[in-house]
Length: 131
Image 1 (cartoon, rainbow, N blue to C red):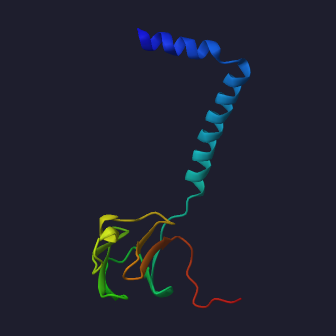
Image 2: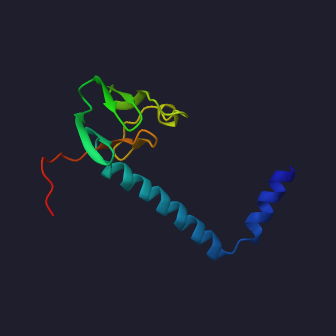
Image 3: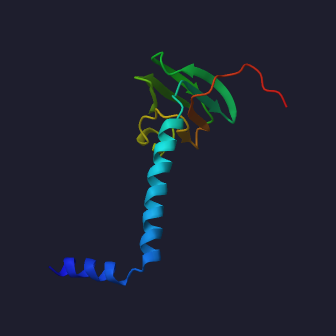
């Protein structure tokens, strides 16, 4: 009963402008969620960088396990079920392994001690970069 009275009190002290503002913000958040959902690009590629250089460009549709030589040792990366994860890493805290699988465009896994970065992209890959 006390919670019902508190809710009624809150509704009572809000002005019409406050209520309109709350409804507008709720409406905008729903619309932005729908727009983001529709413009989301499908993840197609996995780009693995070592020491800031793109070393591997792999399709997510092809399952494979590779070993990547980083700054402090070899990391094992697994591509399976259109997702990527680090299976094993020589870093001391293993934060990159605990991050788990990534599969959405724009997600990344970074192993700072080993200087390995894995990112997912939906864009077509190019062979050359021009400035």
